[in-house]
Image (tube, rainbow, N blue to C red; front, side):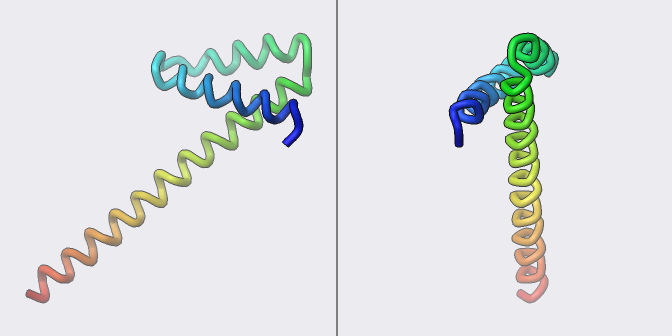
Length: 82
């Protein structure tokens, strides 16, 4: 990635951690607006990094749930066989 994307992704990671701690998503919009006032490119890269990271988190959660459900189903089938 280029410097813009690298910096935006580093900030996005920090902001998502802060959102988890604080519980306030508004910080994302506030930072994006501040960044957009000086660099639309930085703002777009930041928001893209936020969206990509959030999508990845949701996808991993779904995968984990599906695997957990599959394992539970397999365990239930084994228990019925015994």
